[in-house]
Image 1: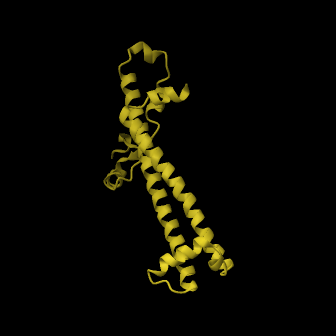
Image 2: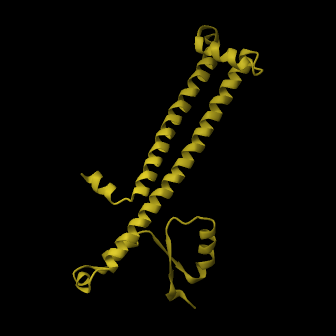
Image 3: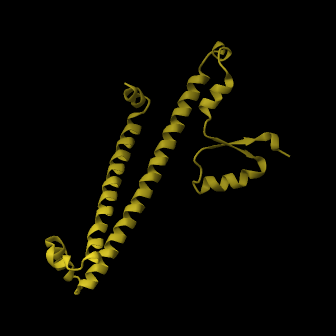
Length: 177
């Protein structure tokens, strides 16, 4: 029931973007699992080098990479270590990307809901405001606002150019000299 009401707040485009984020997060979790699992063969071979002769999967992998120039068991261990490291780095980069995309999505949803709420508040009649605390109403709408002084406008503008803004700016005109 609560999930249905929450989803009703979103537009069709927001729902489809949310589904895409969900798919990206599932992919991220699978990459994390494979990344952790990729370390196990490396640690196994380091702990017991004779396992290369006993394990069919490691033998098959060794035969496959021997076509690319890996000739000795020591080179194979090194290749396993580098491969595991690269996989974990790629997995971490992907995780960072998905986290970034998720945060952008969340902030866009928050902004969209705030704008819609402001429109509803703006269309209300005067008695509506007499019965409510206007401080609470503005807090509901402007929960993500950074108040800046007049002498900080250039810095805020530079942040906006670099897309380093997660919320909106309000200029405090009382600091105008």
